[in-house]
Image (cartoon, rainbow, N blue to C red; front, side, top):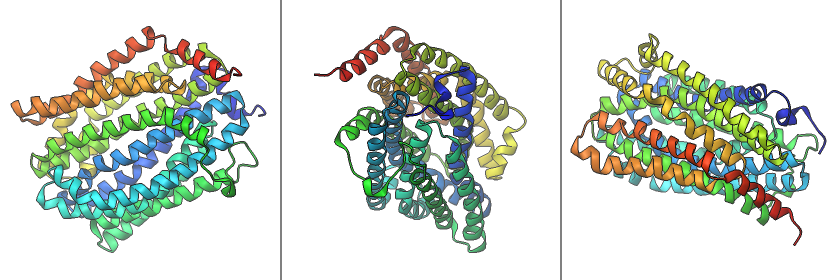
Length: 459
C-alpha cells in the first residue's frame, strides 16, 4: 500500500492529527444525532408534551440494538485501521466485504426483532398509558430503516479507519437537511404526528446509506474499495471483527440496558418528568458527542500507530486527547449551566413544568461530567490496540451492573428523581478509577504486542 496523506496520522504533530480526525467525526456524529433532535424539537413544539415523551421513551430500546451493532462496527474499524497501518491490503479488502455483509444480515434481523417486540418492551418499561400508542407507532416506523442505518454505521467505520472522516460528514449534512424538510412536511403540513417524524428519519438514513456505499464502491481501486460481486463472509476476518467488536457491542448493549432500566424508573414519575428527561437527553448529547468523537479519534489514531509499531505515540496520543476532552467538557458545562441553559430547554418545549424539571436535572448532573472523560479516552486507546475484553468488563461492571444495583435496591428506599440520577456520577467515578489503574498497571500493551507478534510468526 502506497503512503497517502490520509495515513499521516502515524507521523507529525499529534494534536493536529487528532483534530484532523476529531472535527469531522464530531460534526458527523452531531448531524447523525440531529435526526432525532429535530424530531424531538418539531414534535415537542408542534404536537405536544405527550408526543415528546413518546419519542423520548423509545430511545433506550433503539440504542440497545443500534448500540450493539455500533460496537461490532467499531471492531471492524479497529481491524481495518490496523491492516491499513501495517499496509496489509489483502486482509483489509476481505475485512471490508465481510463487514458489509454483516451489516445487511444484522439489518434484517433487527428489523424483524424490533417490529415483533416493540409493545412488550414498552410495557415492561412502564411506559405511561397516555403515550404508549404513540411510542409503538414511532418505533415500528423507525425499525423499517434498520438496514440503511447499519449500512451507514459500518461504512462510516470503514472510512474513518483509513483516515477519511470528511465524506461521512458531508453525507450526514445532506441527510440532515433532508430530515428537516421531511419533518416539516410530514409532521406540520401532513399532520402525521410521531409517525411522520419517524418516517422522516428513515428516509434520511436511506440517503446517507446510499451515499456511503457509493463512496466505497467508487474508491478508485484502493484496498478498501467495495465490489458488490465480492461480498462474502470471510471466516478469518469475521472472527477478528467479533474478537474486538463483540465485547464493544456487548458494552454498548449493557449501557443501553442500564439506561433502559433508568428510563423505566423515570417513567414511574409523571409525564412532565418523562418529557424533561427526554429534553435533558437531547442536550446531554452535545457533551456525549464531544467526548465520544474524541474517543473515536484516539481509537483510529491508536489503531494505525499500533499497526505501524509506533507505541510511544499511543501513550502521547492519550495524554493529548485527555487534555482536549477536558477543555471540551468545560465548554459544555459553561453552556448548560450558564445563561444558555434555559433557552436550550425552551427550544424543545415551553411547558413550565417540563422546563423547570429539566433545569433541575441539568443543575444536578452537568457538574459531574468531568468524572466521565477517562472512560471514553482510555477505552478508545485500549480498543484501538485490540484490547477490548477488559475495557468491556470494567464498563459492564463499573457502569452498567452498578447502575442496575443502585436502581433496584437504593432507589426504592428513596424514590426521588435525584436518587435515580445519582446513578450516573457514581458509576462514572468508579469506572474511571478502574480504567486509570488498569492502563498504568495492567501491562496490557506488552501483552498485545506479544499476541500480534506471535500470530505473525510462521508455525
